[in-house]
Length: 428
Image (cartoon, rainbow, N blue to C red):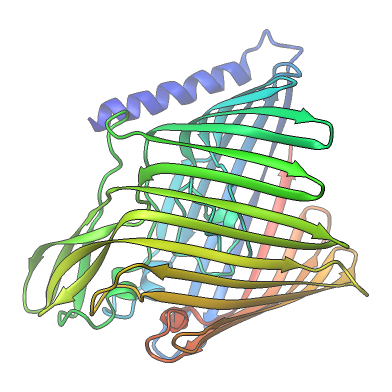
C-alpha cells in the first residue's frame, strides 16, 4: 500500500517536472524562487529547555506554458523542536523534528469565465489574524502558535479545484467546487496539552493514524461568493475527515500510556461577510460543524462523545493613520454538549488586538495582545521587523503566555521566549 501510494505521488510529480523542464519548449516562461528562514528562541520559563529553533525552506518553480496554462512546483522542509519544547506531562530530551514534503504542486488552466486546478494546493476560505475559523480546507501545523503565519502553517491537499465566474452590472460572484481523493491530517500539539492532568501516568505516547489510501476516503465541498454595493458574501460547505483526531486507548502501565489516533467524517457549513466603510474593513465568519468527536475521561478511562460546534468571529481592520494601523477581533468557539473532564472547554472566547507602526523603508514595529475570557488567559507578542535589503528580513521580538491554570493560552507557557529570526528570499 505504501509502495503504491509512493508510486502515485512520484508519477504525479515526475509528470509535472517533465512538463516544466521539457527542452523543446523554448517559448515557455520559467520563474524559480524561494526562501530560507531561521528562528532561534531563548525561553523565559524555568521548566523549558533553554532554547528552541525553527528553520524553514521553500523552493518554487512557476512555469507558464501559455497565457491560459501554468504549473507550480514547490518543495518545502521544516525543522523544529516544538514537540519537546511544549510538552508539559513528560520531560523528554531535546529533539529536532525534520519534515521534507511537497508544497503546492498543481497544473492550472484559466479562461475568461472559469479556472481549474488539479494537484496539491492550498485553498483559503477565510483568514483572520490568529483565528482562522472559516479556513477549513487544508490541514495545518497546529504546533505553531497563535502568532504564526497561516500561510506557513497550512499543509497542501490533493484537490480538483474548479471555479466559475459570473457578473451582471454591479453584481458579480463565483461558484467553486472542491474534490479530494486523499484526506490529510493536521500536525497536532503534544497530547498532554489537551489531556493536562487527566491521566496519572507520567509519559503519554500517541500512535499516529496514517493517511488513508487514495480514493478510499473522499472529501467534497463547494462555495458560492457574491459581491454587490461593497458587500462580499460567501456561503460554503465541506464534508471531510476531521483534521484533528480523537484518541482511543491502546495500552497502559503504571508509568506509561499509549493512545491511538482516529479521524472521523464531519461536515462544516458557514458563511463569511465583509464590508468596507471609509477604508475600515468589517468581517464576520460563522462556521457550524456536525458530528465532531471529543475525548473525555471517567475514572481514568478514555471515552468520546459526539457533538456539534459553532465558531464565529467579528473583525475590524483599520486604515493607516499617521503610519499606525490596527486589527480588532472577537472570536468565540462553542460546543453544543460537554462532558466532565473533557479535552476541551464548552466555550472559548477571545479578544485579539494588533497595532502596527510603519517606520519607513518597509520597517515596522508591531504589538499584539490576546485575552481569553473564560479562564483569564493572556498572550503578548511584540517584534521589530527590519529588512536588511530587498532580499533579507531581520526580526527581533518576544512572545509570552500566562494566565490561570485552566486557560488555553497558559498551555503555551513553555514557549514564552525572546527570539531573533532572519529570512532570505532568492530568485533565479
